[in-house]
Amino acid sequence: MNILGIETSCDETAAAIWSSGRTGGRLLAERVASQIATHARYGGVVPEVASREHLAVLPGLVSDVMQQSGLGWHELDSIAVTAGPGLMGALLVGTAWARAAGAVHDIPVLPIHHMEGHLLAPGLDHELPPFPFVTLLVSGGHTLLVRVDGIGQYTQLGQTIDDAAGECFDKSARLLGLPYPGGPEISKLAVNGDAQRFPLPRPMLNRDNLDFSFSGLKTAVMYAVKDIDMTDAQARADMAAGVEAAICEVLVKKSLRACSQAGSAHLLIAGGVAANRTLRRMLDAQAPTHGVGVHLPRPEHCTDNAAMIAYAAACRLQHGLEFPENWDARPRWPLQKPGKS
Ligand code: KG4
Ligand code: ZN
Image 1: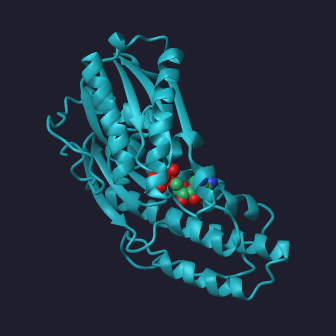
Image 2 (image 1 turned 120 degrees about the vertical axis):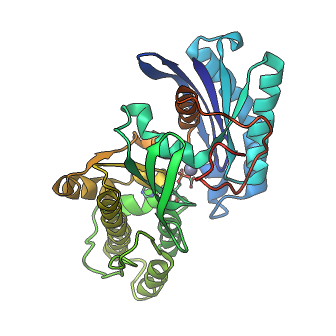
């Protein structure tokens, strides 16, 4: 079964081909074109600019993956496209393009929930662990803990009540004069920093629930930054290390608590922030003492990509799940209902 995946929900245009058989699956080809440089000068994603760039870039990326895979259109079994959540204009480019290609080549088009793609992305690089497992979805727009009892069976255990973790990285980075997206920039700057120098809060760490809150941390960073000399490279590095440690500590502690409450020995991490080195290091150090195995996608499969969209479609098909016949792009779409559009 060969599936072409298409992703255009935010600021990455992507196409990929996943092929699965009885003995497993593999990625035949993938391309991701990031718009980060285009949006960086505005300090964040500009929706209209994103849509135009998706439209300009997507056809070329699809041609590339078709060529790389060596497949003809007649050898594709379906086209999986991100139908939401995301920016409406951006989603419309991908879904309209997928539908047009599907109509021309007589291939079914399957709507995929972007977060379901992230949630299952660790399965692209290694076999998924047995159910139930817990996934921490941690991106620029979401911070969610989800119990996965099977493909399509997702229960939200906790979420952020305000900013997402990636958003906190991005806003803190801006306060430190770093470009967008801030997560990788903070991480780079933090390498030579002392995380202990500026004590920052660990919001909601000691509350007995699995929710997160990052806006107070952002405010604390705002005040702390006012007191440092921005020309002092060491002070900026120490602040970056402090921010990174505060965010990662909360993510790790709450994720391990979620595993214990869900009775799961497996934790999957997905979404852009999963690429963070400190997060990975903290998990390596702490998860084994809780009897939890950690599963992470390769860094390029943590951020937005189309391989995860094709893979999620393959998982749903393999488990006999149905796709709606009538569907539209959905900027807001609850994860609990990924099969219904
Ligand atoms: O999943 P993603 O590519 O896009 C969505 O938000 O859906 O995630 C982007 C977010 C941004 O906030 C970015 O700053 C963050 O992931 N990010 C990181 C790292 N790489 C990307 N945050 C911390 N450390 C990183 N290495
Ligand atoms: Zn994403």
